Length: 167
Image (cartoon, rainbow, N blue to C red; front, side, top):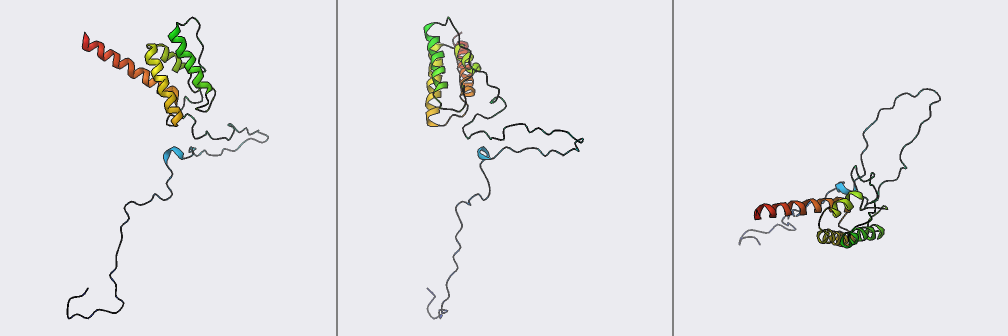
């Protein structure tokens, strides 16, 4: 509205500028979804008659595949004999999780995970495995072996801290 006595311009409207709350990312892919980047390699002249061999199958890892340098170097868990009942239950649950196909690969819980689980009390190991199973079914856990090793290390530190406070 214009003040009294001031004629209104025909068809004049105030310009309204709207600021967006958040700008959408244009052309930016989340880091977890980006393809691996290869370093540029110079092409050297090959001698005449040399054979070129391509390494790698050309297949990229799936979206749920474990990442990192140790992902391809997983050692299958070595089954132990002569374990007491509770440690046998830990080993059996690890085998069941490996065969459940919650994660890609033949042994997502590897030898290092089993060794770590057998180094702590069986109740703690079973709690860790139940947490791994829960997170696996939710799809929030990509590397179960790393999770197990970290959980065992944290439980060991917690136990040492309690022992220091008591003594």
